[in-house]
Amino acid sequence: MQAMSVQQPWAFAIARGGKTVSNQDVPTAYRGPLLIHASMRVDLKACDSPLVQAAGWDPRDPLATIGAVIAVADLEDVCSATVHGGSCDCGPWADPGSHHWHLGGVRALPRPIVTVGHPGLWQPKPSLVAEATAMLATALNNVT
Image 1 (cartoon, rainbow, N blue to C red):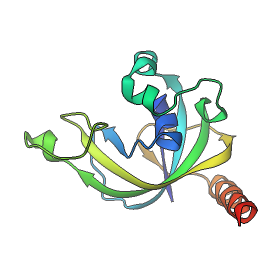
Image 2 (cartoon, rainbow, N blue to C red; image 1 turned 30 degrees about the horizontal axis):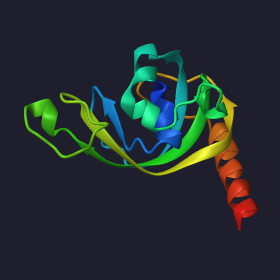
Image 3 (cartoon, rainbow, N blue to C red; image 1 turned 90 degrees about the vertical axis):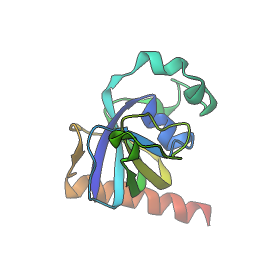
C-alpha cells in the first residue's frame, strides 16, 4: 500500500465528496490501495470553490483535519493526455496540464489517524497501514 498527501479541502473532497481525480505533477506506474493523507497545508482559495462547496466542505467535520490519514482509495488509472496537449474526459475535478490520478472505491475512515506525511507518493509505516485497515474492517462489521 502507498500513501499520498493532499492539501485540504481537496483531501476532504476525496474522502466525503466524490472527488475521483487527483491532479498531480508527475505520473505513476503504481496501481492499488492508497492512503489519503490530509497535509499540513490548506489551499484557502479552494475552500470557496463551487466544486468543494458541492462536496459538502465543512471545516468542523473531523475529515477536514490536517496532518492525518482520513481515507483509503484505490488508484485505478492515470491520464496524462492534457500534459501532452491533448484532451480528456476526466471530469470537472481534472485540471488541464496535470496528470489525472483516477481514484475509486474511496472509504472515509471513521476518525483521522494523525501522522506525518510526505510530498508525492510515499510508503507508509506498516503500523499505519494496519491501523487504517483495522479501522475500516471494524466500521464494516458495525454496518453489517
